[in-house]
Image 1 (cartoon, protein in one colour):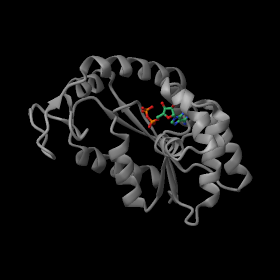
Image 2: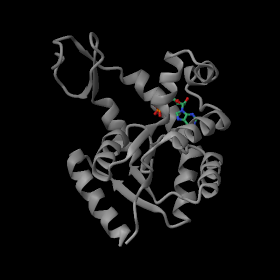
Image 3: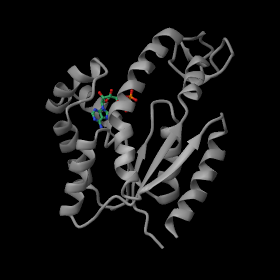
Image 4: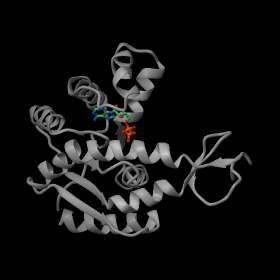
Length: 216
Ligand SMILES: Nc1ncnc2c1ncn2[C@@H]1O[C@H](COP(=O)(O)OP(=O)(O)O)[C@@H](O)[C@H]1O
């Protein structure tokens, strides 16, 4: 039976990576790293890395590989419990190769790559139904006019969101899909294909089952 300690989560924006990532971290007792969140923290703390990254993040461009590679290597080196999940990294094949190189040097490797394969039409529907509270920023799929958290007015940012999504999807297809294929060629992928809307908990159960099979 395979030991599953090193996870990578790959998927397009709004594919449910955040939710399934939390599920995996809880189930397998993993330290999880979202490179997007870490970069945002660096920006907020005005570190040198944050200053370098900001110019790219502002334009919704990928931060150069070297910066992100160094950041992830630092995070992995500092960890005491060697069980982790990376979300949002590797995002390019060059990042995947750099990670492989780093892990090989340490005598270890990626154990499994969970690919959230969600149809583009489904993600577009999610974005269309997404509302954001104009007061507290709470984001949900709802048709309610009032925020369930603070009572503020719920607004839709459909056009902005659709435009941003189209750009991010293009990047995903061009740069990150090849990452999923890179790992697929190495037999490391567990693919979660989602073609119709399902409860996140149901997707988690399916995922757990697939991981059990993969592990045998
Ligand atoms: N692995 C990565 N390589 C390069 N840039 C990254 C990476 N991860 C995150 N970023 C940067 O951080 C930003 C936010 O990332 P993330 O939180 O994953 O959200 P999004 O899904 O909006 O891209 C990205 O737009 C990009 O500029």
